[in-house]
Image (cartoon, rainbow, N blue to C red; front, side):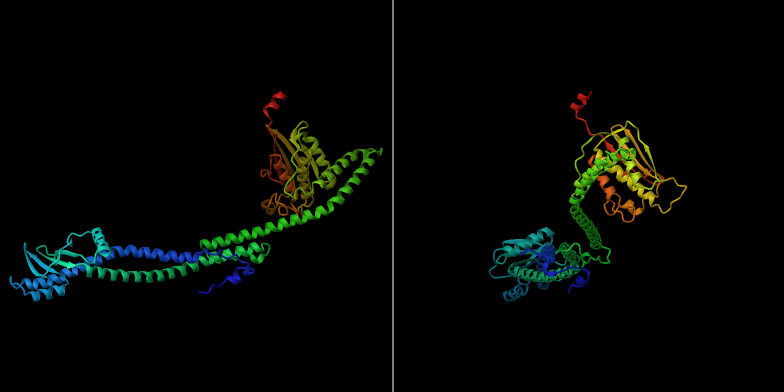
Length: 497
């Protein structure tokens, strides 16, 4: 059969690049063919053993029946002894050396050869068992051919009449060998036909689809970014069809992941090109802000420290801007910081960047401290608050009566500090919920990258904490951060005590 459908269903690319079987290796189809032949031959052998034993018994019974027919006729001659010539003809016709008939407890020699050879084996066909018949059959095939045997059994199933023969087992062995030869060639023919039918059926049902998936995986590995290399599942509902569907889904997700990784790589390259110049610009801005802080103006003196801290953070961020592209952040330098002070600074900066109508509420105890890296925790709360402010500014269902507010709530529970950033906006859309914390996919607004949440999650996890969407909020969006304190070594605890 010619293989069809592979060219239009498998984007296999250059067929010459396909990895072939190594030298000496057998394909699944050839293994299947030989195994089918082997199993059919084993089945034929299992059938041959009892059948050859049955052939031997039937051959001996035929000799008994033939001799019995002649003996019954001769027995009707009323004790008259047959001439030797007639006895020899009878023995030759029945293939025996001697014939004796037993009737009603009386035995009579019907015919016997001039020189009767010595009997070496005796067989009673009336009591033979299947296992004994098999043993006797293989004994005749392997060791017979020149032995004289005695065979006896009832005539026609009668208990009052039996026939007793003496014959050579050479003709019996010859008949059994001919039967075995015929069975062997018939078995080979049946094996080949059966194996061929099974092979072509399984090759069509299993081997070709497996080979199709193998060729597709080879082609896909050569050009995983090519969408035409994704396998097209066949419209079947069996296990192989399901495997093709899963393979197509996996290849599609892998291509999407590769695109995102390439996007990240391009982003890292672009950022690395501007990073050097940006640091120089920020350094100049830092020098100018230092001079600006010396101006004797109340408003300047109020905003100058915040400006200095903002520029300092920008310089630090630009030095580590490639950290996310390298899938790592700096190890947190943890110490106890005042969370109220940190939250106020975040709200002041976000308020300057956002709509003045957005209100900020701090529900944080003035003496609440959290053990964390101050710069990294600033980035976490800043990203969440800034996202909330953007959601409130872009709410399409803007209602003048609706209070637009961002709340930062924090409380300690044992050694864990819980921080919530809550807004009264429209909430996250379904797509953003499905891809939450995934860069370039989890953004809730048009043109967003989703990097803010991804970075926040990475920083929180670096502290051994967790960040999640708080589903208990009925309106707007709320994120819950849980930060545990660092375990204190026993020696340090005793020293503090």
